[in-house]
Length: 271
Length: 260
Image (tube, rainbow over the protein chains, first blue to last red):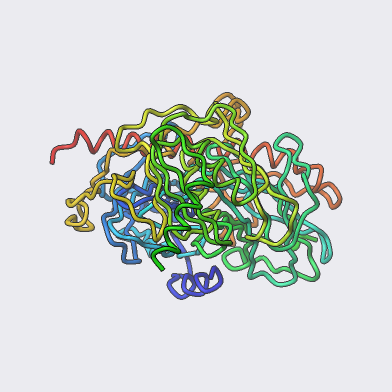
């Protein structure tokens, strides 16, 4: 599913000389109908000129309403007025709160258009600046995970062709569904085998030996848990960070529900 | 046929504990479960289910508020998901590797919530559990229909509903450290880092990098570094979720006071 989305994202992308970059966090939200699904977004102006009239709009059709509003990244308070484009200085980033209020059951990868009047839109990259949005007519689990790599740049480095890289995840279920989750790893990168474990939050040591495939986590609402993901190399992993990424999805026990949570990092071989 | 149904109902009534004037019926035809309860506490309902399904219930101070529940032909996990929503609890599973098939060994109801307390409105209070296929004649905790939401065009400000959101009351706990650690990332830093993780240019740290990149550790020290990344991930999570709650609350406030 992620791979399909990735292909669609690349199809929608504007590749050469990207002036804008964008990101969304959290990457997935699961809420009830008419309950606002919010996330942070950023637009980075990588050009040497002011980007004028920058805005965010959903590309994917969503039944309901959408808004974006600038935020102060230090206080996380909204600033400005809703749905009002802003200028972004060269080399600067503007943070936003985006909010969907959906009026019918819905579950899709929502692609967003991050664009300014005098730039090309930011490249759409699944699990970087898309939102897995699920809206249902009943209580639902809603997991917010975030990954942290040893190099603190969102990239996991595999030392040599056969080494093992690793990164950590902290996650919390802020939904009201009750019981979750199964963790699932996925990657389009070649020559990588993934395994994961739940860890001691203090030491980062695996509580059980890492498993390939699914890992069960009995979440308690509001209580964070930590995990480690290991990427074992078996050949070169080229640095192609929009494509060669590792996804970790949180699913319900039956595995049929859309992603309850999602995080991801880029992966590469480092000599 | 009628006599068979009557006999089943009689058997069920005899098999299930009944407290006071309330009603509690549990029908478990593996793997499907049906529950009808009226005026029963969560512990009583779970106890009756556990007696049929084969798990035990440990009550460490669960709510004694009577509930009305109507669940028909659901899986055990789906039924528990509905019954336990909004309740601080732990589930212990028997050691079994097959996903989705691990039988539940114990349900532990925890008295002290692990999150900041919230005050439910009568409409919020989970008194009736609904699952697909469930029928009930009483009010559920589903949000009231907001007709104006469906009428809003995409350009119109989203009509926020004043219902309870679990996000708003999340407390990361004393271990998050985010508020006191000067090195903790801000939401802006996290977003920048996430955006740049997908950009080729990030291979050579650029001028826009928010948090300072850390050199990749030498081979063999990855395990040792996981303590640090685990700590940082928890800080980042606290920053993100608390930030999201703050921003969402601020947005709600600003929209509530904005002219129509």
